[in-house]
Length: 367
Length: 232
Image 1 (cartoon, chains in turn green, cyan):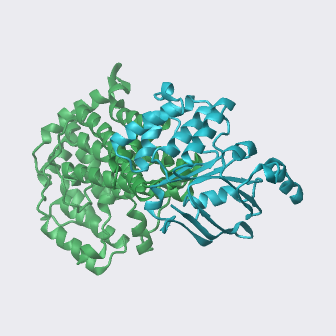
Image 2 (tube, each protein chain N blue to C red):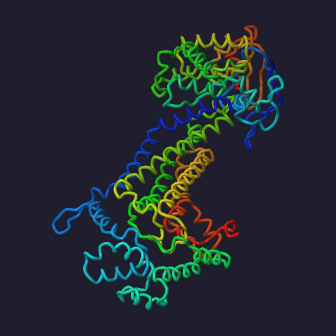
Image 3 (cartoon, rainbow over the protein chains, first blue to last red):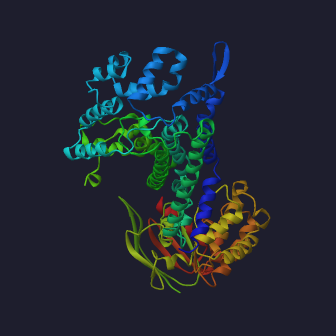
């Protein structure tokens, strides 16, 4: 592989010397920064005083931190119902717990919430008094999902075992909005990264044909195998660099604005029906590793399209439609089991927060 | 050193672009003439390994055209060749040198030497997109010479170059023919008449004339034009 790294350097130069590359990376970078910082500027009036979304969130954080370290159990829920019955101010620390967890677990059964007590809610959902409300209601929701996702008996058995042996239960409450936003924003980031890579890399091979430099390249000693490897390496190095930059632009503003509180809290505080045994911190790391791998996959596909179509415009369109728009707009119902599962393994869907409640396993993990 | 072209054919669906051409080329300058569509560029692209022949073989001292060893001693200037607009002239030559397998030191030395030869030293650090047509053509000639090729294939090398430069390059091609096999395609018959050791004339994918040309045979341009007229 003579002159391999020299060629990689030149190929990187080709990518970086194009204005469109800088425009694409710049736009995505700024969008993700703005996505994180907009709360610092978005404001509205509360009782005649102008308050930014960030200030409001900080007030909510101060309230919610009063519950930090408490176990999510009937005792906490009793306190929540009591505060709810008292006044608005007393209820503030429990607002997120109520909205994101308890309401989610009651599902469509609004009667359970209207009872105003843990006992009443249990009665409405048919939960026995000895059981903890949150975990029993969650089990009901999970059972419904196991049915609706058309799981095999083996898969159901696997998840029942997980449910029985969960060590994170009972969950410990903490404020988690910062880490939650980082997790959620990864979905937007990967969609924009796919678009950014399509625009930046689609010309790497295609341009050689369009600009007629392929004639010089193909008749040179290293113009086939070595150059091809150098182009792929340069494309993937650019992919890793630009993706890393965008992911940093996604995470850092959120963490600066809201802090890292909740890093060690279980993700079930926001997705109670999930059986993925991870904390928010672990989930962020996992999501970011998947995002980088997904970007590398996208980068590779874009490079293949670039050579295959020999036209950067066609390659960009093919990649945007097939890798971004179709996964975002099409839903394959669960009953088409294999097709639906293959479709949902698209990185955009894997990174999405709702994939945490996808219980379908591939046979390898089923054993 | 012998470049053997043995019954080389290139067929595109219903059209035969090159029809069973057989040739043996040794050191010297070969002038390739023919009307547009005669198959000259197709033949040259096959000699460079860019196009795969439908039939026949091309070898240099037994080394097949598809081998890296063959490409290592090949220099090619295509007609209407592409460039990287954001690269400087120097970058372009260093990049091509890396593609041709030259070491960094060799590449730098050779690039400087060739930029001087083609009178582009002053603009070596300027982007190619700022070059005139003639300057780009001279850069193209420089890249073809980077690896001191044993086979040099030049498709319209003097197109767009001013008359003074054209004469200089014609002489340079003559010099190169002393140590290499140079295949020169151009519509400027006088250039070929002056510099070529042998004439190759193509029509409808076939070789209709091969051999040296001397004044006793008459005017080459007239002979060349006669072939067109016959076609009409």
